[in-house]
Amino acid sequence: MILVQISDTHVDVSNSLVYGRFNTNTALEKAVSVINAMDPLPDLVLHTGDIASRGNVERYERFRQIVDPLLVPIVLIPGNHDERGALRQVFSGTTMLPSNDEFLHYVIDSFPVRLICCDSVIADETPGELCPTRLSWLSDRLDDAGDQPTIVALHHPPFYSGMTGTSAKGLLRGGLQLAELLTQHPQVVRVLAGHIHRPITTNFGGTIAFSGPTTCYPFGLDMGAERVLNIVNEPPAIAIHLWLADASPTGPGLVSHVLPIGDWDEPVPLLRDGKRVVS
Image (cartoon, rainbow, N blue to C red; front, side, top):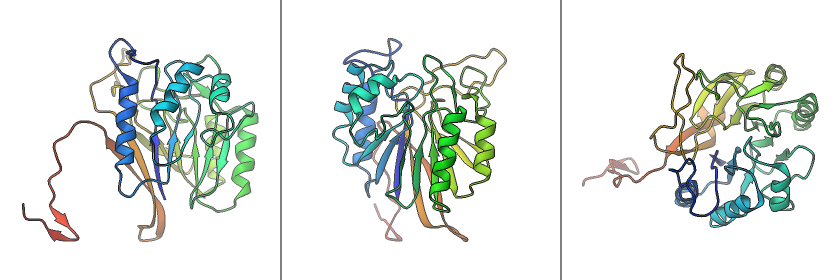
C-alpha cells in the first residue's frame, strides 16, 4: 500500500496570491504532477486539512478542478481554515469526503492499513480539539477492527511541536485522552496530521505521530523567545507512507518519506537492477 499525504494546500480563487506572494493553486498543480509521475502510482491521496485559504464554495470548487487530473483517489479531512457547510455543499456524496455528519469523520477500510479520518476542527478557531463525542466515536472505530493495522489522521497535531509561534500546540483539548486511547490500541501504526506546514515526527500514545509538510509555503523552525511564526523559502513537499511486508526484521510496518517539490536538475543514476550505471 502506498499512501500519499498532502496538507495545507490553502487554495484560493484563481490568480490570487496568498499573503500577496504565494500562488497556492499553482503549487498544488505541481504536487498533482509529482504524484501522477510516481512509479508505481500510489493507492490513495490523503489531504490532512486546510484545503482552502478560507473555506467557501468557490475555493473548494477550484480545488476540485486542480485535483481532477489525479490518477488516483483522494480523500479529505477538514482543517481550521475550512468550513464544514461549504465542504458538505461541494463534496457531499463524493468519495472525497464520505461523511455528512455533524463532524466530518469517517473510515476507509479497503486497504491493508485501515484509515480513520478524524475531524478536529473548532469552528472559527485556529487550534483544534477532540471533544468527548469525537473521542467516543474514535474509540468505537478502533474497537471495530481488532488488530488490523490502522492510521489515525486529523488536521491538528496532538503533540507539542517545539516551535514557539501559534503552531506550538495543535489541540486545545483532548490530546491527553487521545494518547491514553491509543495506548490501548497497539494496532495504530501512525498518527498523521498537518497544520504546522513542516514535517515533524515524535512518539505519541505508544505509536509514531507525524505532521506532514505543506504543498505551498513552509513555516520556519522558529524556537526563540520572541514566539514568531515565519514563512521560509524552503521547498514545499508531500509525504509518502509505505506499508511494507518487510519493513523491519520483525515483519511488516509503515515507512514514511518526505518528497520535496521543486524544479531540480535531472537525477544522476548510479545503479539499475543492482548494477552500476556507466554514464
